[in-house]
Image 1: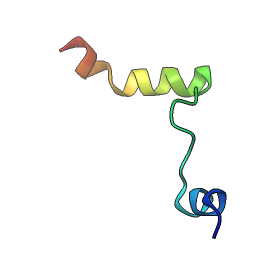
Image 2 (image 1 turned 30 degrees about the vertical axis):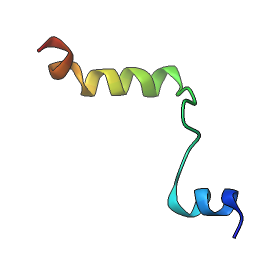
Image 3 (image 1 turned 180 degrees about the horizontal axis):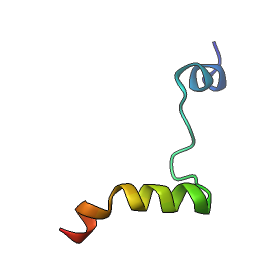
Image 4 (image 1 turned 180 degrees about the vertical axis):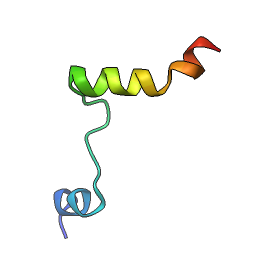
Length: 37
């Protein structure tokens, strides 16, 4: 099995890849309590 196939099989993504703005804002909102603390 190639590395690309293994990554696809386990749902891995590129480390350091940027997410879209909508996803980023969603992650930020989900972590708001931690950020404020």
